[in-house]
Length: 261
Image (cartoon, rainbow, N blue to C red):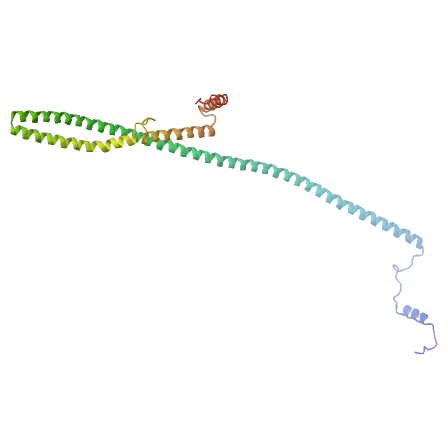
């Protein structure tokens, strides 16, 4: 492209800018004293920096205060929670102790029931033993009477034979046979009663039987119950004395008195 003769392109562009640009305002005016303007702007900048620093320090201080307050509140909350946790732990331990103690008390209740059952069994057997003894004594008395009757009737029959009295012989034999039958009947009644008496026993070690077993069970359960109650209630009456006796037995056994009971 061939440029027409005229102004320099830069000059032309500057001329166009002057024609199209808006007139300069006061704020756009170039300061006469640039150094003073620079100093004023530096002052304003320093004032702004100072205000910004003051604002920043202010909210930083507020933030620090909030953090400090929250830290104190958190520390107090943690202290309270720690105390509550310790109290909860104590309550939990108490709950475990109560559960364990309750189970031990339930075991003691079972032992007491076993003692009562064994004692009731022993009392029932003792009553039965007494009744059986009375029945045996009664049957023995009747057998003794029948034995005497038999001897008497046998003697009467023998005398009737010597006398040749047939009617007395027949009567004597009838009575003798009746007596023998009575003795056999009493014997049949006595046998099971005596067997039952042997089953029951007399409650002693030399007479083993159901009564001795029941009494032994009652003693065993009572011993276990006493030990359980002494463990559960160490300050109950007699508990300390029994503990001292147990320690004395152990001491004596340790010193060679193995036969000490």
